[in-house]
Length: 127
Image (cartoon, rainbow, N blue to C red):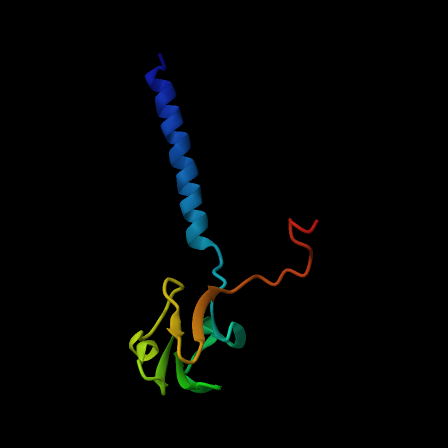
């Protein structure tokens, strides 16, 4: 049977490990979020939401119609669309990657993705 002193040492070690992991997760550098706008599966525009300081709008024109995209610091939405169902407009603002904005009639998708680090060297798979 394990003695009480051993249990205390195991508990203290686990507490130290979880404390270090918590400190690391809070202090690590976040890379930011990029909003990628796709039409027919092709990325037509990328916006780094972590660098946006002022609100702006842009139009995405497709053969099926036009969407007006509004961007503010940390969030993005479809402000206007000439599609019949207006599901993309009713989706509202998105701030995380949980739910993308989709306009099926115009084949438009807005996805939020974490900004990748710029590593010029080979990755672990290609070595």
